[in-house]
Image 1 (cartoon, rainbow, N blue to C red):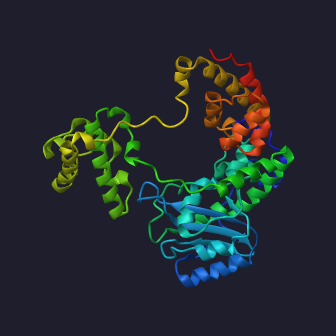
Image 2: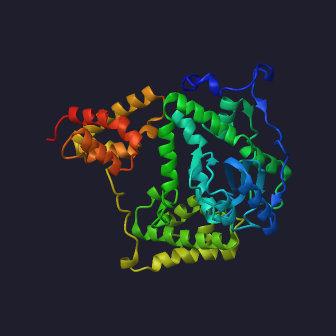
Image 3: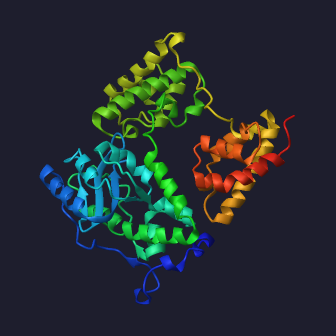
Length: 423
């Protein structure tokens, strides 16, 4: 069954010819076949030369080994450009791709879900100056399903085989079916970009998309998380400070081992095991082995490693125990607003209704029209003067783009004005 939001997409971006049949056409092979994997400086120099001489936008994709290796590094970078064809570049053999990034620096890069790939591309020395994000474009155009496979099928009429998306891309040599899959991921990306640009132009949203793309390019790299051990899954069960110290010690040892072995931390020790050990605070290897995640397959030496971490936490003086996590900056959870500040709760209800209604009118997700966090912050601490210029300025201060300000400032001003006054 086709989603109602998809039926509004212009037929201009629908594919195929009648002879293609009623269903999508399977895309089985890249147009020029599977290119050889670029693994040496000499081969990389040839790719750089070819892509520098190419024309038009550059399709870019990257494959990581999430869940297998430590970190989120790229283990394959795929590119395609008119006049250059497709390239598959191995960042293990060619870790510095800054020359390739510079060769295509003046071109528009076409990525799908750009924010997922940009961090690992940045590690290789590749960063775009301009980009077109086909996933984000799909959201703004009103598509309900914005995965690459769904977009290629709905917009261009071809089906992509997506069975290798979660494999271990650090495997060497990479199997031919995986390489075929990787090459096909960029095969139609520029075609998809062109069709979506046409659709966004038809809907009057192309400038909105360009503002969103520019914001992605301008965004600074995320700052390292403070106390990343606090994000251990199940941490909400850990109440006592000494138990928190045990989580911290176990997490730190796990991270060190995972980094040294270059494996996903979860393959060293699961979050559930860390939390269970912190709650139980066992005093012997035998007691530790009885806990979930510390089963028979774990050797004595490993058990002693984890037990030593728990013992360090047990021995810490009170002054060195971690404090309970501070409440995050910004408004409290909305469920608490009615008790803490009924007037703010009323403002939030009115603002949410206004934004939701406008998003439905524009046929795009509410979070793309204005992030829920921005709405909450505006309603928790509204401007002293509820006027459209003041609300617009507050939205800009929270990171809203100009198109979002234009679409929401008038209705949010009305919503805040209509809400019951303080007290």
